[in-house]
Figure 1 (spheres, rainbow, N blue to C red):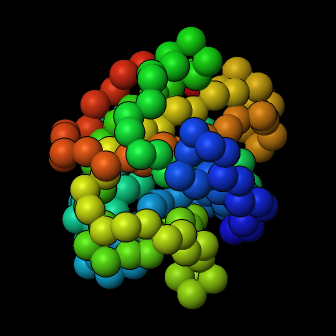
Figure 2 (cartoon, one colour):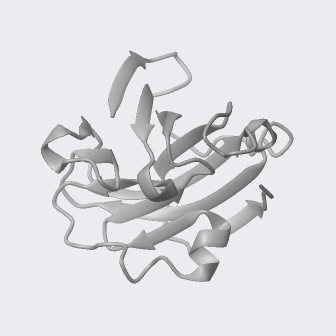
Length: 166
């Protein structure tokens, strides 16, 4: 996993450009102090919505199990939903009890994972994914991209706003 750049436009609290090895078609966000894991959270429904949630951790599915570009945005308030620009949009919740937020592929060594400062609290997590139609026939190449936005909000059950098809 590589942290490519950190950008902070006026409209965002923070934005991070990452390249993550999405082994097994997934990566995760977790409170470093969290004890939860996703082993029981990856139900068929979670795979279809591309989002699994457990105590202090959110798993995100990808359409490739290669290095994928991921943008993480920390926002002060809920952003407008942009369904037209994305193939798939889903929301869930994450509680950060202590932080920092760890962003890693599921097989990345935890000590090497990116750590991003995030104030403890309850967050909405929105995954907006695009580029599904750019995958090569073997599924190894493509221009898929994953935008993950977090903002303070009450807890919700995972909700699909737009269902993508690969």
